[in-house]
Each structure stands twice: as C-alpha cells, then as structure tokens.
Length: 86
Length: 277
Image (cartoon, rainbow over all chains, first blue to last red):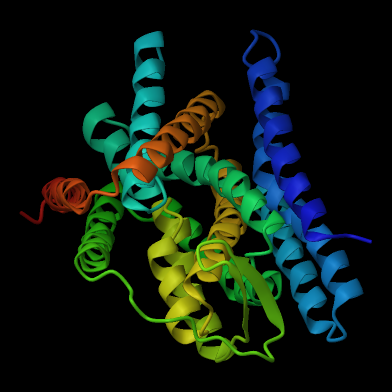
C-alpha cells in the first residue's frame, strides 16, 4: 500500500534524477538530455501527486481528496501539453 | 552565459538560499531581485529560473516533512486545486506584461514580505496549538514530546485565498509561503508546524504548475536552472545549520532590512523603466 514515505521517496528521487540528467546534458552535443532533466524536475511534484492519489484513495473513505490529487496532476500535465502545443 | 556569469548565478542562488534559511522564508524572494539587480538578468528569466529552482528545494524539504507525518496531504491537494490554477494564470500574465511592471509588482509584494518578516521577528507566535483530542489528523511534536491531534476548518475561504498565493507564485517566481502559511494557520486552523510543512509541500506543486508555462515559453535556461538549484540547495543547508546555532533576532532584523532595500530598489527600477518616475 502507498504510504507517505513513498511520496517522499518519489519527490527526492525525481529531483536527484533530474539534476543528474541536467549535468549529463551539459556535455556538448547532449542538449536533448538537458531538457529531459529540466522536465523531470518540473514534473516531479505532479508525478508524486499520482502517488498521493493512490494513498488518499486507499486510506480515506471520502474519495473527494483522491479526486483532487488527480485533478491537480491533470491540470499541471494539461498545462504543459497545452502551452507546448500553442 | 560565460563562466564568470555562471559562477555569479551560482553564488547568487547560494546567497538566496542561505539568507532564505536564516529568515525562514523561501529563497525566491531573495533570488529574483539578486538576479535582476546584481546580475542584470531579465526579470522574466529571473522569475522562471527561481520558480524551477523552488521545485527542488520544496521537494527536498517536504520529503523530510512527509516522513515525519507533518504534511496534511488531504488539505494540500484540496487547496492546490485553486493554487495551481492561480500559478498558471500568474505565469501566463508574467509572460504577457512588460518587464518593468513585473519588477514593480515584485517590489510591492516584497514590501509585504518585509512587513510579515518584521512582525514575525518582533512578535513571535505564542499561541498554543488548537488541539482536538478527537482530531482526525495527527503528528508528533518533537519539541513538546507528544502527539498533536487537530482538524482543519473553513476550506472554502482557504481555497479561495490560495488562488492569490498561486497567482503571486506563478507571476513572481516566489514560493508564496508568506501567504500560504497564514492561510493554513489562521484560516484553516492547522497547527503552525503542520502549516509550515504543508506549505512547503504545496510550494513544489504550485511552482511546477507555473514552470510549465515558462518552459513552454522558452524562458527557462537549463544551465541557469541547474546552477540555481545547486546554489539554493547548498545555501539553504548551510543557512539552516547556522540558524540553529545563532537564533539571533538582531540578525534577522538586519537581513530583513535587505528585503526592504530590494523592495525599494525593484519598485524604483520598475517605475523608472516604465517612464513613470
């Protein structure tokens, strides 16, 4: 079952991974990796929100909380998609 | 950006993180004006860089808070419903308005931060926890050596005001903790420690939402963001360790004066560039 520790670990891992990718991407010729690194950092919180959704869904009778977590994540992913396409 | 510029950006971010930790605020309020005033950076790029760097600091600090069960995830996701929208709207406005106006607005918000800082330093909170033995939410307070149970309330007004916190965050590249913590504490009735932890968790989500706009607008310089993240993380860690030893009210007051200086400088620069004064 998803716990608060899992959400915590996701946040930390996402940032460490993002930073690692950014530093690798600084090597000349590896610019796409640089952008993947930045995106990894930016998308770490909404990704952790997906775990928060699972945590809230399993631990609380009122599913409204879980729905909010999902909505928040959808807004952020949707915003990125919308702004990239326009 | 040359090596000297990169080093300056790293040092500016470290300075912001260090000072932010000493003052007990996020580094964004210091990083953005330092980038603009001392490095001559475009305000929009400074704001975008700060916002992306705040995601990292928020993730690192809230990962600790989450393990200690201090974050109220239920309330955070509900309030973020309006905060993320505010952040996206704020960032979109920032990309559209002229730089001078952005700088002026930043200076005014910084003046508010200064007032909150001075107030917090001169009159530290003495209020006891509004505990509820039958509260649904619980955390262990290490300083009191006991469990604290509580319930939150007035979610509607808190969510409405959270939109403003998101708007400020997305538009100005700040965490918005100076707005979020009072909303959680005074309006939602969350104990201060849980309010700070929940705000810290929320800052990352809010900054992430605003950053999507800046990323798509091409205002995020990956190298600059990498340096800012490293600088602010290192600076805030050293600031926090010194803060634990100092706890000097005078020091906090002195550094608060720097905030006032930044506020003045940003407003004057902004209005001058806009041709108003």
